[in-house]
Image (cartoon, rainbow, N blue to C red; front, side, top):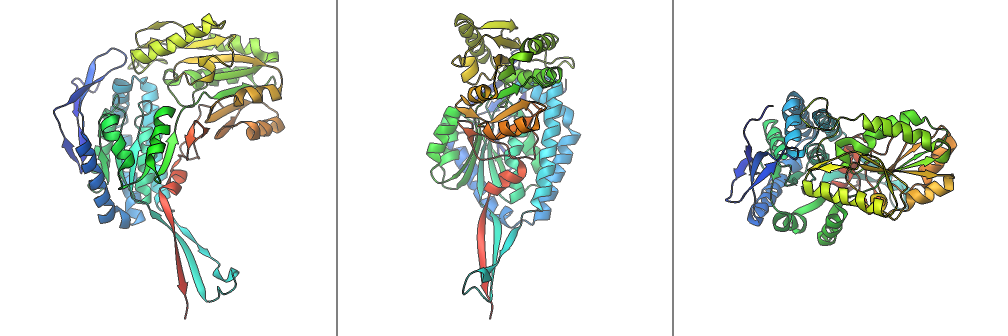
Length: 480
């Protein structure tokens, strides 16, 4: 293990740590050990961070040439890649993420930075054919994209590195500045990331870090007049409240889901079962697009269930620092207790546990539920836990209705070898994204990612995030 003593971190404004009297512990979810201590910022600190970012935008970032922004992002990617093991170990310690998944997250984060470095050089515009209108002769019209200012980035605990970069990297690529507020349970990776940008040459104030209570600093990061956009990943209740407070500011919200995955009887059930093991149980199901509902056509239902249970029973549960571990802890015992109570509630209502279902501390076994109904919490709400329901269906129309019977709509997976059926489902499912012959949990960092309904508004994916982090400016020229 790289760290033998607890890391002490604080908010960073223009690279300087802001240490206050209030400190809280960062706790390893697996064993309860204190792995870090963080100084909590105040509202005054948040105000200072926003003002610093506002000044940095007008002083440097607004006019920084594209090649320079690209160079900084690429250098940050190189530094992060060199320190993959260090950052992966931090994710193990603060989030309880299995080490192999930690390395995977770092790898994706490096890729996000490189996508952003490329896109920084592609921000362009277009010429408008002014002579398309009567009287437009001898005029030239052009559309340019310009950065909008200070971006407020509020990030969750489950992907504390990669999701932070899905907000920071496109903002910097477009020429904006950022104030980052990470989840209080996972501030260590955020602190290290901000220091990495500083090492790569990002100007002071262009990326400030505020670690504090949402009630004290969060509201300011939403309502302050110098904030031009808020990008938030978290719970629907917080996100909806945030949008109501934002007024006319631009807002991107990545909220909850209970993603459906649909297997038709012409699908490869073995391949689907293998993919859905990771799809449902990666990082103990604490993933927005985790496969929570698996609908299986009756002709292959029992075959799939048998294969699926056998694969899940082979998963290794234990210390996330061990190379062999597949399933580690949930983020807190409180969350594990809450998820376990949902299992018990479903069983009392008539559901059955096909495998798993037991809890010890923060560890909840990967659990497959059957005989469920659409109104059970484990089906209709977001479990955010290692719980999946396997549900039989007969017809295409029936499963579309069941999949769409949700307040959420982030991503879905469809398994079929019928291309016509696949495209019908792609059109009919009420989600922001649909994968064919892939689980709902798959995400690549260069496509437009986001949901509808209570799953949020706006899109991530570097190129698409940058569209909402820039504004269109028209310039017209009348020739002599």
